[in-house]
Amino acid sequence: MALIKGYNFPDELYYHKEHTWAKIESNGNIRVGFNDFYQKSAGEITNIDLPFEGDAVNQGKTCGRIESGKWIGKFVSPVSGTLIKVNIDLEIDPTLINKTPYKDGWLVTIKPSNLDKDLKNLFKVDKVEPWLVQEIKKAEKK
Image (cartoon, rainbow, N blue to C red; front, side, top):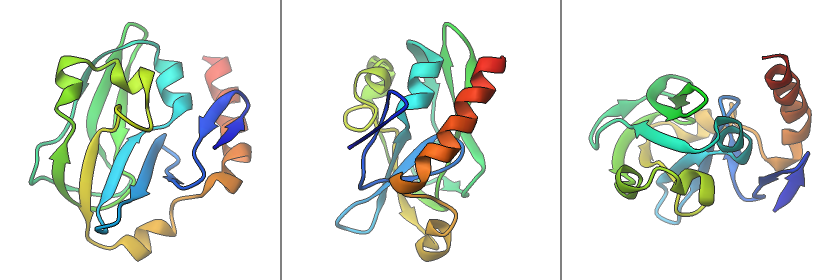
């Protein structure tokens, strides 16, 4: 796990510029969640609206939203495909996103429709730092 500017970014994940991560599971499906910077920026998560199982999602498109005491933000899919599982535990305790964003706080699982193409638009942990520095600067200006 890389610690970058005080934020955790696991090595094995792919990252989307809209603050989601993608993990390729052994069966080829993609588990998705919010990165550490996004959940910390939001503060305590109070609600999350996710798409439904069976819904089609598109890479880079908003498919849900996140709410905290600070703001309402968007959930952007890091890959295109069909939603096959939603983390229903978040309905009971949305703060799981804050507590363990890379484990129990995952959001959805997607059966990808064009993973090879989508991966070209994501980045691995070795490319996170320059992007994260810019995101921190943007957040400081708000």
